[in-house]
Amino acid sequence: MMTNERQILQVSELTRQIKGTLEINFGNVWLEGEISNLRQPASGHYYLTLKDDKSQIKAVLFRYQIGNLRFRPEDGLKVIVHGKVSVYEQRGEHQIILDQMEPACLGALQLAFEQLKRKLENEGLFDEANKKPIPAFPQHIGVVTSSTGAAFQDILNIIYRRFCNIHITLYPARVQGEGSAAEISQAIEYFNAQKEVDVIIVGRGGGSLEDLWAFNEEVVARAIFKSHIPVISAVGHEIDFTISDFVADLRAPTPSAAAELVVQNKEEIKSRLENLRYQFINRMKNLIDYYQQRLTSYEKSAGFREPRNQLMQRRQYIDDLDEKLVFFMRRKQTALSHSITNLHQRLLTHTPINQLKLIKNRYQNISEKLLSVFRNELTNKKSNFASLLRQLNALSPLSTLERGYAICWKLPEQTVITSSSQVNKDDQVRVKISRGIIICRVEEAE
Image 1 (tube, rainbow, N blue to C red):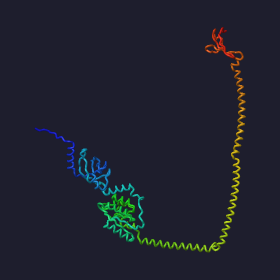
Image 2 (cartoon, rainbow, N blue to C red):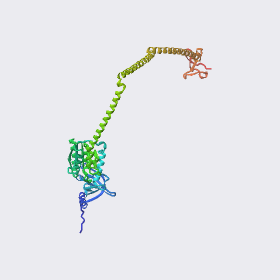
Image 3 (cartoon, one colour):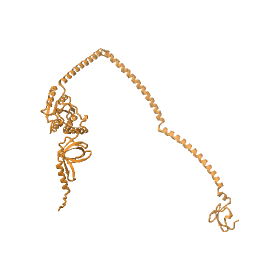
Image 4 (cartoon, one colour):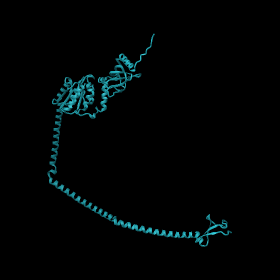
């Protein structure tokens, strides 16, 4: 007899079993995809999504693995990664834990070069406005390179051949391999702290991109940019370009070229000085000859031979000027006197007393005119009033009453009686006469 017994698992147990199966079967996976949703929280780990046109998978690159990267991951970048597939148990999501990453299109070094170049350029480290001038005649030169490489010997040979009096100080530093970038930046900082050299040459001979990588490190670029002493970058061959070339105050295609740029040829300088000396002597001779000729012409001139005559002529010229000045001043004085007289007359005319007199006369004239107009207007008004009064008296009922007539009103309606038919016997009427009012009773109406 068979029985079906159910095996019931916890969610965490099932998730753990799936995780173990995935890690066993997919523990060594190479994957190509495009980075999206990249984020780096405070822990320093990279969390991202790898996708293609049909699917996607979450991935994580832990902080201790990031130091092995030559470039910085970015959204939209196609990469080839290596890792193992696992499950994040808390959410039950499968993901790939990465231990390697490289660009799918460019090499890692080339991509890192382009990323750092773009970053520093945006910050202004390549701007020409920040470049310091290289001294024309440095007395002390600092060199940062390997003490065993050919670059330093080339620099020494060329500088001493061109100008043997210059002092050179080498700060030996590794120019290739792990820790080389830190040594180069420390050398630049050392020369700036000592403040003994006039210019610094940083460089090495040619090599592959990986060989020259120390000069593409951000720490070296920032050390060059912060340097108060002018820096010449001389890395590799003429076709090689590094980040330090863009940041430096001057780029030399090779270390030998840097030596030629920083120091002028002593013999050429001596030759130029000799030419300048010859030109100076000729110039001075020409000036002496020129002034000698002028002196000779002055000695032969009438003024030099007869100075008293020249002095008398100058005195006469001064007398003429004096007469002209006196005449001009008198004419000017006369004109000013006339002007003052005219102004005085105008001022008298416009004194406050005269102005008040004029105003008073104008006021009196206006007052007289107003008074005359007012009197005439008053007379006319009185005449018109009397005429209107006479007309009013002629039309007034009071005048009629004065002649013996009366006005009657029927009481209590106060209706004016104009006909006997309006009243009946015993009606009361109110009679207005010239002087007073009479209340009457009707005895008879005809």
